[in-house]
Image 1 (cartoon, one colour):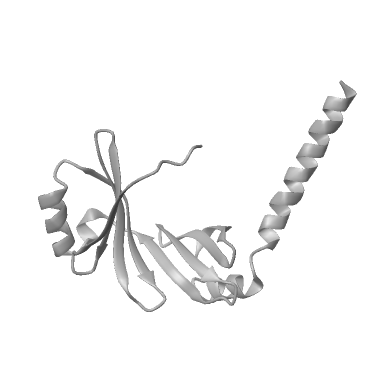
Image 2: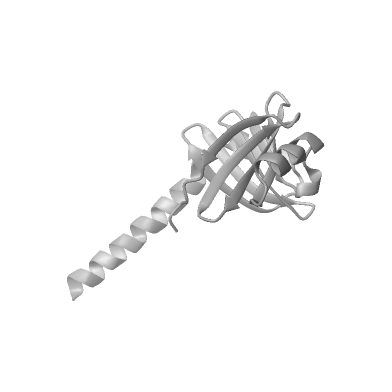
Length: 151
């Protein structure tokens, strides 16, 4: 019983240290650039998307958003939640024609570091869920089956 208790305590301490280390892995340059670009942001949550890429999820003016920064603080991408009505007319036309009956979810406007805008969303119909991406002119950039993450 003592061994189990010691093991549990050690596991908890290790988890707490790893969680603190993950918070410390976000470069100061990224945090500084974020604070300068989005000073009114609320509900801020940082994570490491991959080595050298740091994602921050936040709410700005009651809109869920995220931004991806590199280690120097340069913005790689900004994503903002939008409604179907905010999609370009050409994208809505393609959705009506090619994806009739699909339920749309998690619709986002994405702007990359060069200012190129695209629109990403999940489209579900029955057991099929697709991840769709359109450019600003409504052209389908990608259409891939969505792999659900395990909780």
